[in-house]
Length: 360
Length: 173
Image (cartoon, rainbow over all chains, first blue to last red; front, side, top):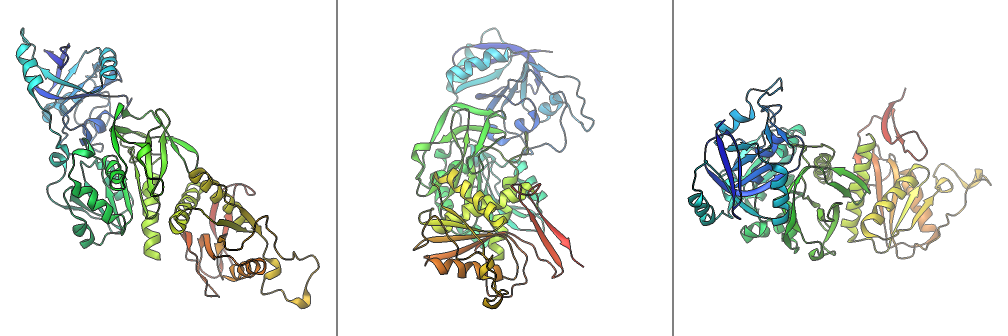
């Protein structure tokens, strides 16, 4: 295998072996602590413009599974692993991770001391990096890395440009695509919902015209503060009339639409090992997370919103509910792709909220 | 309906109670014996978790107010007027029962409540609405609508006194 380098904007160089595509890419380097589910993580659009480092030392052991895509065209910029498995043993597998990344034009590097790298990322926070060919003089590569400005318009690049249906014969649900992961659509399909996916730029009027029983705001990449104000205006209008369930980036926007502030997390959550407390039942569960931002707990207007879920590692807000409307949100991913399915019953709760309103 | 579905229904009802009452001020919860009492306690526990407020919970035995028991055959063993540790005057009462069927139990419960005070309003929370009303009564908070035939029975179990949390439809003759 040929050599490739991961270079960071602080001047560090990590030498490893190439796999996947030979492309040269730039991105923000983030690490994910999930032990399983690399395919769902790599294909999750929240990693748009990011290079993912896996703390799990061996990645690729079960290849690529046809039923585990979270997007059709993944938009992450690289995959960094300690060890890439060259033998895949999933009986459904068609592709190895290496073959998949070649097709998707995403470069990978193996043989990197991911423990040291993650130590650095934890200490420094946001780090820009680039995956490059091994050349003697890296000065040019560093110049390019330092010159590059990563876009803050990720949502406009991953959201669908046009509305599309995901037909069912049950309740009518509109999903606002901010960088949707397929897990959300899968959960709605399992519950036989008739889904219309709308682009992130849709208006409240366009949603009302479809007369849905409920609206879901999807997960997505980047900071909610970089998105146009029209989005929070839309949410503030919709929540008063239609049951609303917001997830991930959608949750952050839902909080902002109701007066709360969102701030960057000191230590981003990318993994599925944080215990999350459901306050109302005093129960703990685990769910997969991918968040660089969090709702500032102090900024929540308690007369307007209830905090429903808390991350027990850092006490960050993981769920909110409006006091006056059937509208609620979670920061974590309740669709169990990857990870535990124990919070997927939030989709059942959403279905029950919609059904109760219909029967009334 | 299994443990999870029952838990979810009570959770949703709790949020709806907060939504509809704009908080928990002046709220009291009254459970109709037997299983309604446990459901009332569970709702109160959830409200405590969320709002950190102890909402008073009362137990109500409606036997003395049933419309199939008359003065004539009044039994000295019948419970008299209900008694609560708290006043109902001006309060928002949430009446809780497991199954809503003919509506006669709820009518009796309302009479019992009115006998001892004048609440600001009474709302009804029900785990299962099985239809077949004989009185113009309707629940404000419903866990689940389960359409049934007259000869079927709904069997609600709660883990406090039964072996499990469940709702089952039992076929009659």
